[in-house]
Amino acid sequence: METIKELTTLEDWRDVWKRSMDSRILVYKHSTTCMISARAFKHVKTFQKLEGDKIDCYMVKVIESRRVSNEIAKDTNIPHKSPQILFIENQQILWNTSHWKITEHHISEAVR
Image (cartoon, rainbow, N blue to C red; front, side, top):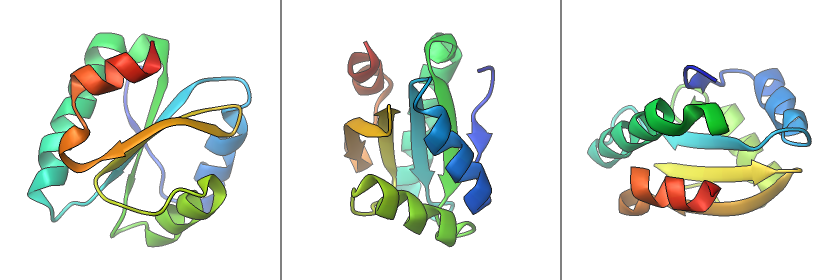
């Protein structure tokens, strides 16, 4: 995937959740009012630029799309945090982390 696609509707999320049965995906939860999220998002974008052909990357803005963020937490059984990143395959969470642990290096290691 060439860009990080934003999930804004429950339908968007449901499509991605289903797609995880056929593809490995990353979902990044981003707060537009948080400096830690701004830093983490830079790392996600760097990862996507360097290795985005290996995995589909998605983002949800947790303030603007609260229902989507809450549904992700419910479906994955991973309590909400932001920033937060989830590595999903076959509707299973293979790895997740949050805050300062979101780095390009950690993401690359997780998806290998």
